[in-house]
Length: 388
Image (cartoon, rainbow, N blue to C red; front, side):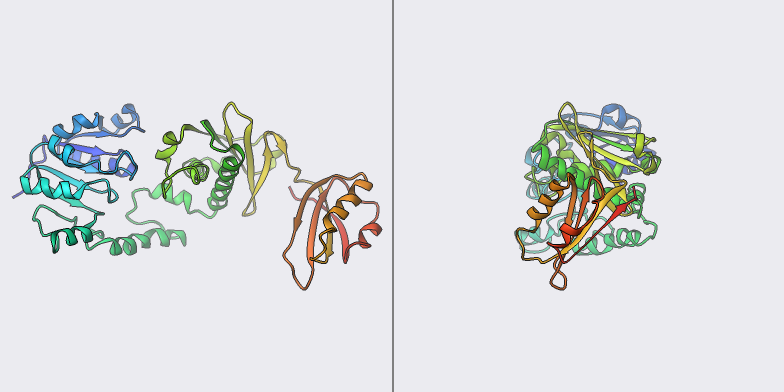
């Protein structure tokens, strides 16, 4: 026997992109859609015809409830004995979120007492329910949706991995709600910029400690116009990674960590950097913490800290080969630079290969000769670096 949907109310917990895709077809059946999300403003949710209500008003108001929230301390056990007691008698619940958000013991009790009429899930603790009940959860009101999720978590992991993995190899995503975001995230052009955003976030965390306030993520250049939805999260997740007590970091933990995020895009690249295709900046508003970087080829490069730029263009390079077991080598080389009135601008060294290490020093100008250097090294040479 079916249930009439026209005129009924659907409560949507969590108002992300998937929730919107749920709301639209339900509205076509004549359902009134209400929801709750502390991050999205009522004006935004109203733009897709979802009225925001406090949680305590949603429970008794709705005949159907669907759950799309992340697993956070504030959402763990969100549906429990107390909330089921507040719901309409015979409420239908669909849990599309992670296990732990619904107290499944409370769910079984609500179904057995008639407080809940039916429940469907996409992710649940079915194996633990099996142990608790002494057999499979055969309650006729516990209805797994007819989808890839049915049959437990393994088909979910295998089946849902395919479209995402295939898209990473250049295929178009099929059946993915966030397809537009995935298209940008997995593009070959965007990947190194995501690596840069993660690196800048990690640098900011190590430099500023546990920042409080407003984090400003600024993208410059036409090629980054559509990348704001993946670069800003990449930087923030790296910034939060070691400061959060949660195994999986997501943007909903930003307020819990004590800061806000602003994201902006400017189509122009300023000054001498105008030759670059783009710049990415991560800064703490009102504090002396700003890191700017760009991508050279596929390599993230740090361009400046607090406005102090690292010289990249026209940098003279001193190359030398040395024995790997000489601890006095680097102090000796720096001493030779001081004697020649040169500045050390950058330094890199290689792994040991054939009993030697290779060293590259960025210096302020070319040396008049390398005689002094050749006395302390196996081989020495210098060159101009002309790339920007």
